Length: 209
Length: 178
Image 1 (tube, rainbow over the protein chains, first blue to last red):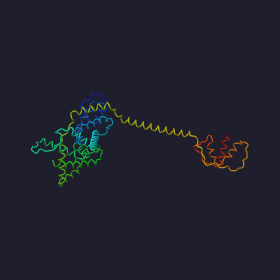
Image 2: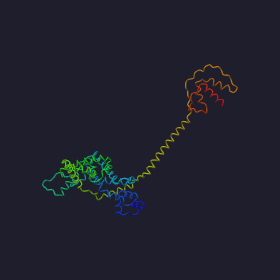
Image 3: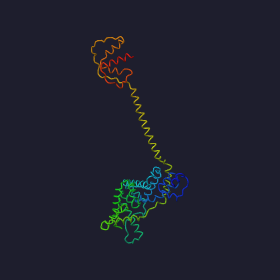
């Protein structure tokens, strides 16, 4: 009913709180009916999830932000084509996944350019820990940060096609079926990649836990 | 277990883990590593994220014309197909017309042989002398070519090769008709 109301009276101002109660497909309909703020609510809903997914996949925060912006630009451009019988989240994750894959492919072609780009913006505290100081007893904060870096590094060491499935399942909580659709694999491949990724991750990170 | 196993399969799995030390160690190791992973802090977009995004979107609105809807795209595709079919039909009918205007081919089956000696036929009162002599002097195997070249005949589709006598008679009838 609410969706119908939004369709009939698109220019009537709708409060953000009301829009936040709509599901994704209703927000898409509202945006297509020129309801102000509908797209903004979609951005708000997905920006952090997508940023974390892309960041864990490509391993570079700044680049991840650029890619997430590109995701939203593409969504905005092609929203009229979106088949509303399908899940919006699957669609948007598929776009993000494809952009992340392209990024990794480009890096594999030009590794030197990528390294120079990555290190040009580094500050001292962004650098990974290279030497441990044995004279100072590390405090809890340092330990936690060190552990985070190790976990991050362990995720990055996974092969990219395993990493994507692993992040989608373990960090984003996507279902197997959705992951299969996002990564264009069949369900068996998703299960197998996930099993291998879990085992490899546990093997890398296990000794430091 | 991931919530994907049936109750029965889960029971079997747990029973196995109670007995098998290797699998239990593996299971514990994986669970601990996943807990460490899930303890990673979520990163948030930077402060300028929204401004940059909406700046890009406003630039898009200026430079980008929206993609037509699915119905419009189908319409365009159908129009293109219809135009192609119409062009093909027009081209084929034009080539057929050109063929019809082409002059009838002159068919030569064999070089002329000297006409055999034949007795002159008896003159009929209704047939002009010139017609009879021209037909008589024609070699028998040329009769079909002459027949086809007659006005009003379809030269592009020659009929079956008629017996010698028949061709001559037809030609004569045609002459008489004129």
